[in-house]
Image (cartoon, rainbow, N blue to C red; front, side):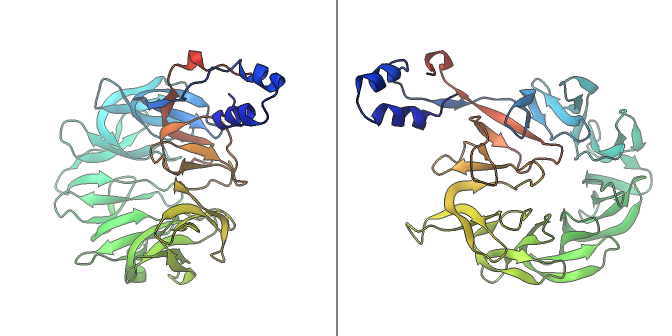
Length: 355
């Protein structure tokens, strides 16, 4: 598909009869897009791998996705052909990993247990005499533990694959921070975040207003509580890039880190661009939003300025990888090159003719 702006420029470059003749093949019309319901899976070129016909679907892991059909609130597991491997049976489910088990919410009790990819329970949703879980997070395939929320106390701790507490509930909130052995956590009675290890000990005392995830660079995005500005920190909590930006996404490439800042046009107008590890702009702010860059696939989604509900894909050269448009994309592509998304379709595509 030829880019609309390219067609317009073709019609404006000289008004010779040859140019007019070529442009007459294209109907003059306003190109419009609309958001379509339904989620599917795309590859790093923006091509649909699983057609967008689900009420929800997760990014594939080893060829499997958590999904809900359009006519049900329950979820099951589908493969890359969009076929049901496990029919919808859970009220909700956590993120899949390379392990054979994951957190899932029982449709009847509303409690969480540990399900297997064959549909059976590895740990029942209610552990007799031990209370239950109101949520189970991502099971790290290296440590084989996950964060979990105790239904009785509403506090978070760590559990293993059998549903036993490895670290009893101690935090108001725990967030997977992209590292095998370090998590971001907020203690009871505090609005700040620090870093804890999988033994539940504080590695960095709570001092951040918010904390993101460690990327391939070994650094994580964090927000300084006093100024509410974003920067990058190392695993000891030291600032690598001073907190002077209005937002930063997970840093996966040292010279292509998504960041939000002021534009040259106005000190009050905030847009996203890309910086390096020195905090210098590599691509000046020009996007309404940017996701998390995947270096292996060389792709990241962006929202063009003024189009906060329209997502497109670019590479590290700041070039669009395809003409595909979406109304939603999960913030990051997997290393397998997949991502869940929702389409943004062209109205009346039969009227759009290419030259």
